[in-house]
Length: 356
Image (cartoon, rainbow, N blue to C red):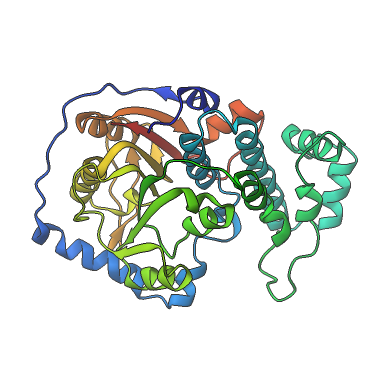
C-alpha cells in the first residue's frame, strides 16, 4: 500500500532518487556491540519518569510537531487515499500556529498581549498564517474548534511548565477520533524504530489511528520499552536495536523513524539504513533533525553516542543504492510554501519519503 501520489503532490515533495539495486551490508553483531552498549547507556542512565516525558512536550510535542503530524497523516492517507486532504492540511496549520504561539510564550510575551495582538490584526507582530487562521476559526463556516483561544487559556496549575492548554493540544486527536469512528480499512503493518516511551504511538492511539494498523515499536532502551508497555500492554513493543532487528525481509508495509540516524556512527548509519530498507515492503518515512546540503557527513561524537550533521546528498545516494526512490522534504521550505512567511524552529529538519 502506497502513499497516494495526490497527497505527495499536496505536501510538495521533490523527487531526487531513482530506483537502483540494493547494496548489502552484512550484519556483524560484534562490530556494533560497543555502539549498542553506548546507545543503551545514553538512555538508560535516566530515570523512567524522565524518559516518559522526554520528547513529548513543548516544541517536540507530537501533537504540534510537524514531522510527527506528517507520520500520522501519511498513515491516514495511506489507509484512505485522498479522503482527508482538508483535515490533513488543517492539522499541519494547527501545528504551525500553536508552535508559533508557544515560541512567543517562551519569549516572555504575556497571554493577554498575545491575544490583543492577534485580535487587533496586528500583522506587524504576527505571521499572516496566524492572523488568517484566527479569522478562519472565528467564522461560522469553520468546522474546527477555536484552538487558538483555547491555547491561550490558563493551563493546568499543577503543570506550570506546560505553556499551552491541554484542551487545545488535543484538538486534532479528538477530531480524528470522531472522523474515524465507524470507518473500516485493511490493516497495515507498521514498524517504528527508536519509538521511545511510545512517544508518537500514544497520539496515534489517542487519535484512533492505532485501531487500523498492526504496530511494532522497537527501542534500544529497556526503560523506554518498559514505559511503553506500561502505557499500552497490548501493543507490540520490543527492546531491539535498529542495527539488527531480527525481522524477516519485507515484514512491514511502512517503517517510520524519528530523530535517530544523527546519533549513530557512520558505519552504524549504513547498517541502520540497510536494515530499515530490508524490512520495509513498500515505504520508509525517515525524519531527520540535523541535515544539511553538504558533500560529506560531519561526525561529532558526544559522550557515548553521536550528534552528527548528515549530508543530504549522501543520504539520498545511500538510499538509492538500497533500492529506494527518494523524495526530499525540507520542513522549513515545505511550511513556507504551504503557509507563507513562517520560520520553523529547526532550519535543518528534513524528511525523506522513500518508496521501495
